[in-house]
Length: 199
Image (cartoon, rainbow, N blue to C red; front, side):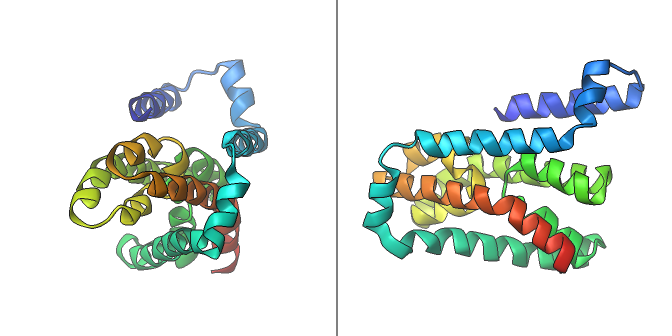
């Protein structure tokens, strides 16, 4: 998955540098709203595919919100401090951090709000978060605790990094990981919009 994302990114950069025009790609890039809504639709499908989700929700009550709230707050604080290091404004930096690892949606959303440059930065930073989480999850599981493994994964904890959770943590953490991914994924467009327009 990560390799395919990198191939797609490099191919896109080459396509942009060469300056050639393919009608299909041009029509796609002019319809970012369609791409955005399609991504949200597929997230909805992935949520619906998790059977017994309501029963698990009743079991954990409000405790399931502790991890995603901590991840969201930690990501926003990280974005806030990164604004000093990068020279971007607080609203731009926190909007980038609001991607929570979901590089495809966050890149498109920030690109629509702030232009291609910041959209590309958002895409890359959230892609790097996902890549780093593949290396960090086994280390965190060994030296800290299973619940902490969910933090680097962010919104990806319900899909691309879920196999890592299954391999290195226990069943309870996997359930919480799915919930976290659902909540974080739902919050990404809301957080990006809020941070970019209100910070």
